[in-house]
Each structure stands twice: as C-alpha cells, then as structure tokens.
Image (cartoon, rainbow, N blue to C red; front, top):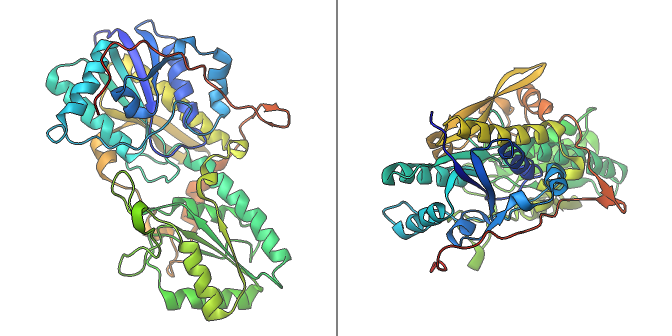
Length: 422
C-alpha cells in the first residue's frame, strides 16, 4: 500500500464516556510516531467542527495535558449529535466537508463514537471513493450502552458497569440499614433498547439478598401484575427490595413505560426521549403495595466516573485509538477498529476490524438466554461476560483533593475557506 502523506483529523461524537479521551490520546500519541502524518488536528464538536472548519492543532498542545487525557472523562474535543443525511438528500454537507478536507490536506480521519458516528464514517468513506478523494477513515468505538454490533464489548461500558455496580453496593447497604422505614429503592439507569448498563448492577452482589433484587431491561417485556408480585414477594422474603430498571424498559406490546412529552419529545436523530420510568414504577409500588419507596436517578453521572473507572476499559480504549492510526498508515480504511474476545478466563481480547455496515445498521442486545426465565434478573453467563471488563483502577492524579483532569490548549488551525452557510 503506497504511503499517504498529509494531515490527520480526529473528532468525538455522541454521549461521552469515562474513557473516550483515552482513545483520542492513543490517536495523538501514535500519530506522533509516524512521519507520514504531518499535522495532527482535532475537530471541535465532531462533524460540526469539520463543517465550520473549527479545528485545533494538537501538535501544539502540552504533552502533559495529552497524557492526562488517559484519566479525563467527557469529550475533550467537544461532542455533537449531528446525523449526516444521505449524499443525495444533503449534497451540500458532503461538498463542504471535502472542501475542508482538501483545503487542510486531511488524509486520515478518525471518529470516536457509537452507531450514528460509525454511520458518518461509512458515508464519508463511500463519498470519498465516489469523488476520488484519497482518504483513510476509521471509526473508533465508544458507548456506555454497549450496543454496538460486531464487537465483543464497547470501550466505555466496562467503566460505567464498574461505577453502577459500586453505586448499587453502596445504596443497597444504605437500604438494608434503613429498610424498616425505607424498604424499597428504585434505581433508574440509562439504556434505550439495550439493558447492558442496568444488568451490570448484578455485579454488586456478594450475599443472598444483596442489591439488586430485581432487574428490568428492554430485552425482557415488563408486565404490571408480574412486577407487583415480584416486589411483594421480594419484600416479604428479605424485608427490602432494590429494583434496577432501564429507562427503556418496555411492556409486552413493545411500548416504553415512560417517555418525555412536549418540545423535547425527540432528539436530534428523531429518537424518542426517555425518562421517568423510575417515577412510574415508584408510583405503582407506593399506590398498589403501600411501600415507601426511594428513587435513585443516575443520569449523566453514570458515564463520567473516571475516579472509579476500569483500568481494563481505559487500556483497551487507548489501544484501539493507537491501532486505528497504525491501521490507517498500513492502508486500512472504511472500518471500525474492534475487539474480539478469545478467552474469558484468563481474559483476553484481540484487536481486529468490523465492517461499518454492520455497526451502522445493527444494535447489539443482551442475549435472551443471559436473562432468567422471569425476565427480572441476569444469568451467570452475563456475569462471566461482564466481570472481566471492570477489573483494575485507573491511576488518577489528584490536585487540592480533587482529580486533575486535562485541559487542552486550544490553538486554532487557520481557516482557509469562507464561513459555512449551514
């Protein structure tokens, strides 16, 4: 494969994770090793930064701050939720993106994100081939939801699973200590169609009766009468009941139990905005069973806990970023770098590739056989899958008693095109 010289550009998209910056760190530090890559640029707020030609020069960033990206949550380059239309529906966006690529001599493009981000890479790769623009574009997986197809697990998931399990342990102990007055806890966890995050609460258990006692995820249809019976029976057996429920929990007709209404009913991609399943279940337990109930809603706090992130997760995120650069140098394009598990005991995953079509158009759900027959708990198969992913702790620099996170010096790359008209 002939050498392709030029600048590289990277961006981040979608909901951040505790370790998405580790992938970006891997890209930057690996790119520094290859003379074929001249400029190393970051797009501010993903593909929107490309459209607006808002790029920063990462070669001029402080190397110490780059290294700190390994232990910094959120999206250091800024994220966005922007769905590229098909070229025939929105040709102006593609024309603009490739005008920017050409003006800035972008020859390597790395995009860290989830399903829609991989769709973006897929579309840009196809367009580059169509117009004859030399570009090596590679997707770097990230999502706390763990719902990307074609990969054993997604960077970001191991850390959020570790955090959720730890919260479950702590809140569960709190519940047990005050159960005579507060016998029921409902913990609402993110997850639209896939319940991987909610299921990870099961990793908290050590003894019989430990939280969580009941787990409800989108993959197993929820039934009102069965739910109330589950809670009543569990409370009678233990004196308490800890419930973990996905925001995307659905009834037997496939309808979400709770959605938002009004002006914010859908997001930028047209997805129904979820939220309120905890309140819905709380009202049922209080109203039908007369049990005092406390509600825990984690929200975005689930995904930013770098202070208790998984070292396994962080290291794999970094390795995938570096692997993406090496792959592009070797001529790979239009792929997502991926993980293939070869052993769970001892744990081992190999670096590989997934076709973007697979990722962009499919969603990985918890296998039904990893949930019990009643649909209110996970099986040992899930625990064996998830437990290796939460191992190890990320060393976090501390300053004045709090984590010291990276702050990149945002040195702008000079713009070469007129402002984008939108």
